[in-house]
Length: 167
Image 1 (cartoon, rainbow, N blue to C red):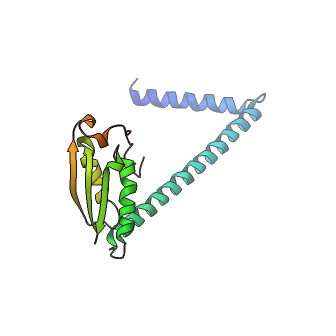
Image 2: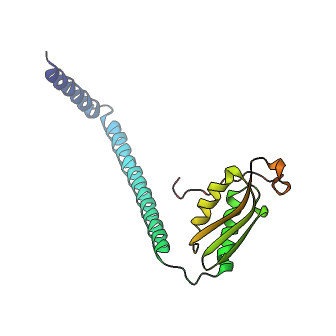
Image 3: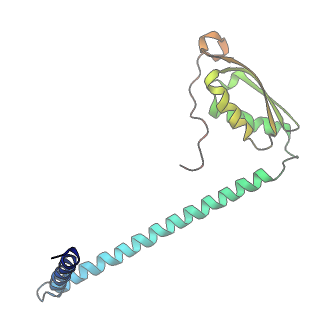
């Protein structure tokens, strides 16, 4: 017997067993009701999951569109104080000693100075370049490898960094 005939025979056997199982005079009605209820539930669960996924995709698309629009729009009217406040908020999420760094802004140019650990320089500069209203970042930071070398870098705590939108 070849595989095609064997597969057909197994399929026919399964269909016959299922038919007998569901059409049994003693318990067929109950079994059919159970199968029907399970199918209805599976349909509801699938519908609910589809709705959740559709809302999630729509919300993510709306967020991506808003982010793209905000990046394309020029923010000439953003005040230096507002840019500095945004940059300070980023500092608090990225570096372990945010008070050791000062931030000054004028005309979309951001100047950062102060003391920072070497491993935190690149993440900080990348994060500051993403601040709305910032056109360029001027790095005047004094970098140290070991917190024991600089008094303003002693203590502090590690920060999680910026969290990506998609997780």
